[in-house]
Length: 427
Image (tube, rainbow, N blue to C red; front, top):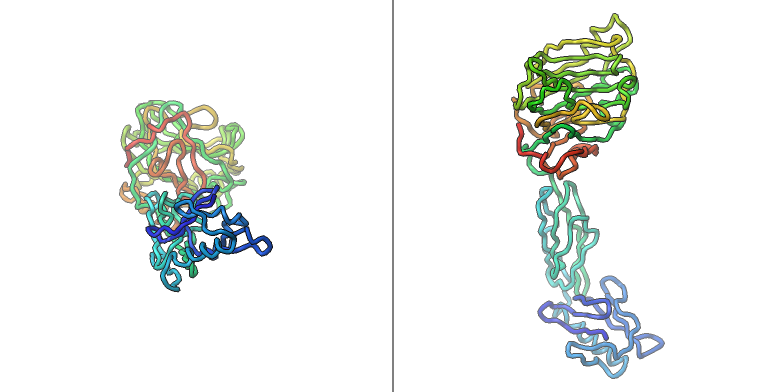
């Protein structure tokens, strides 16, 4: 049986059949051209049949009474019911709710479609993350990532419909730095090694197009291990494939940073002064490379050294330099990209070391150190005139075990760690 009646409270037609119940309008009952015992009901707004060729005595009202004694009387009775639903005159619906709304990523969107003379309400192309409210199809609820979304909405009655586009503009939340990631013993983060990573290099440096910068905040733990890896990018075989490796030496009376560029045999190495890093203190670190040549001639070793700079808390460090085979002149391959581990199984950060606000630039940012350091106050790096190509907030806005790249698409996976390693400790 198909139950149909006018619901005065909803100002709409209630229709229930084997497929469920719905409130709708803009309906017309139609008699079959060749069999006058069969009745269809057409949605005039959508131009589709919502009931097709059902026997006339299948249509009943709210009291379970049939509408007519034959097909013609049933069609007439149904259309009389449909005509007085929704509006007493000939007015068509007009959507009156705002066509533009703004939100912040992560906050709840709560929007209700309203219309003059509206009876039925429909949505199309709702983005994933938004759903209609149970019991009130006019209302949409949910949250969305940053971006612009344009679903369509429709209000209908027996006389027609109004179709409009709703523009939803979702912005990033205001910058706040409250978290970092803690490393203990065998903890590390695995990133996506790609030729799009600024640290990749196809051959010997060719100039500014090969330049890069690494910016991060680091808090040393209490371990005295000499080689605790902050960041590593490069080939899988350290003996023959080049790498960018940034370490912390925690041994007594050393406590400095060390950068190695190249392989175990052919490399440039740079160390900041001893005792420049204290335990349990946050430091801003910027490492830059100008993109030039880094090996090939013993006579040019001083030029190779000059390609790299290390800044701690905005101050350029006087570096102790060394080399193997007068530097490294080959590629840096995209085979490993790690935080907290060097290659497959060595040189972990330990005893509560922490990293925060890790960023990569595809340019030499040494001339912008004052802006990036910002007197030790982290800020929204995407607001820079030349923003980083990748930026990991290291906890803020992240959900374990993924550390999102808030600018690019190279997320980190936390390995051997738990959600408790995203900690409320930040510079």
